[in-house]
Structure formats: C-alpha cells, structure tokens
Amino acid sequence: MLPTFETDRLILRPRAMKDIEDCLAMDRDPEVTKFIPGPWNDPEAHRLFLTGRITADFGAGLGYWSIFAKKNRQQFLGWVLLIPADAVGPEIEIGWRLNRTAWGKGFATEAARSVLTHAFATLRLEYVIADIAPGNVASIRVAQKLGLSARHETRYLDQPFASYQIDRAAFETNASAY
Image (cartoon, rainbow, N blue to C red; front, side, top):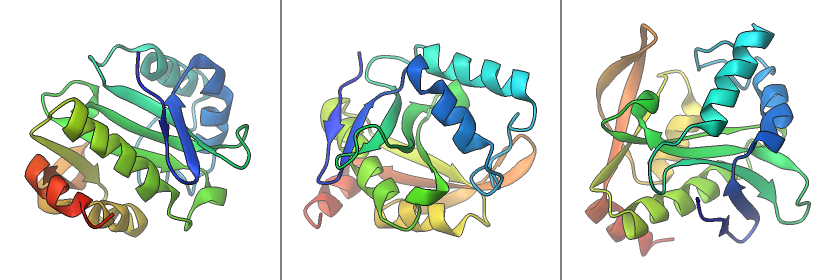
C-alpha cells in the first residue's frame, strides 16, 4: 500500500479506480496531453490504458498518487507518479499531470517534491529520472525546480524526449533549500 502525503496545500493519496473519471476528463483536454503520446482520443483504449495503470503493481513504494487541494478535498487536481520508466524499467521515473485549472500555482512542484522525498528517504533510490518532451516548457521548469538536470535525449513512442535526472545526494543537498 502506498503512503498518503500532505503538503502545505495538497493531499496526495494512492490513485484508485474511483479516480478514473477524473483522470479520463483531464486527459480529454488536448492542452493537458499535448506533449504526451497516448490513446487520449480513443475512449475504449484510453479507459483500458488507465485501468491498467491504476491496478498495476509497480513494486513496493511505487505507483501513482492522486492530488487534491486541502481547501477542497474533492477537487481532483491531477496525479504524480513514481514508477519504473515507461512502466517497465529498469530506471525509476517521476512524472506529473495536472488539470489545466491547476497550472501555474506550483502544485506540480509541491506534489513531486513529496514523492521525491519518498523515493530517496524511504525507498533509498540512487537516482530518479523524468523524460520530458522538449517543447513542454512548464514540465521542464518543474523538473529544474526539483533539481533535475538534462542528461541525454531519449525516445518515447518514436518521439524525442529529454531525459532529466537527479540523484539522492543532489536531492538531499537541494532539500535544505525547500
């Protein structure tokens, strides 16, 4: 079972099937999925993909967390993940997706910071990656705020992505600045 996290403004709880409609609605916004290839325009494939991701066992301490505002605990803001890269590994990746109404408020950084703390302090991972499409300036900025830096180019579903990385020592050094 994944832990639940609380930050100053957010509650992150393990994503569950009760979140599927909120996730489907978020992914139907073309601005939200603009930089992420996926089955977003095929309702059946999209639901099947999400069901698989929600019910998968990614390993101890790994998975997805749904993000909610503390001020409105019913308001689904998005999710953050810590799973094997592209769900197969071997590297462990962090990622985030938020509803457009939650953009520009620092929620992605705040949520991802909690999950990175879990990755390094609890799971004792050596490093974590984030693969981000080159044009996704907002996600690149979140990665930079978290202390991740670009390492190399990679591909996801035959599209170019930049692979960002942070190791435990760098995170622990940066953690004192939070």
